[in-house]
Length: 312
Image (cartoon, rainbow, N blue to C red):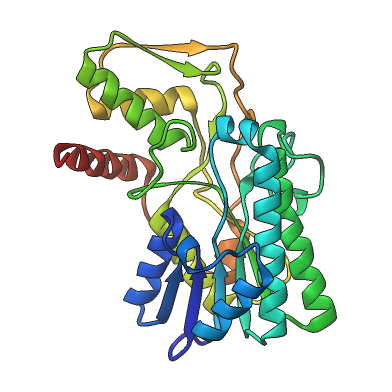
């Protein structure tokens, strides 16, 4: 799709990834409109239709989601399933009805089976049930791929589907109840350092591994995919490498200057044992490869957090 001269609507455009996607399109000279919850309830057909009529997009990037860490997924499995499924289902149908030229749906690595081998390839998406702690969320997002492929088959809809790995970077959610692992660790270590706390206790045993991708790289992948990919198959967006949560905690504690003890509460869940997505299809399909190394990105993020904390 030629993006120049086209208007792109980004749902979830006021969220973590969404703000970076909007910036990525703006810098590239694309006419982009980022919308958030205040602009319409994506669970309601009438509000979606009104939003599309107001903005008249040529393409839509669907990022809006209800997300959170293990604790939030365990506490709100029903909400995470319903909201994520309905928002996507209603939006794709409205885009079909109003003739939107192209839609990019951003899914989640949580959709993969909990027992998927690493590196995980897109062809393994249906090889089992997602990891229990976030299965409702993962399955809701997986259903949007089914819808995308069904609409492509029956209606000729140009809908593409990306599966990003764990994202991190400036603007992330640092709430300890709803945030993900990197912002959660940073906040815990900052607060412990500032309070002179001798020990920080973290969930699980630290053995799980994760594949982390900087949010600016993910935003660039969205632009490249919208412009250069038109296939029915899902595409991983990942760094292709993994680090254990224990190693990650040590790195972040060092960057933050916390020198106390890091303990582990093994009565709490680890989540999926390993996660590393195979990045090969993204490179082949639309030329994406990550540009920001994890150590560089973490150092930048910690500096950003410290600056914000210093400003009150």
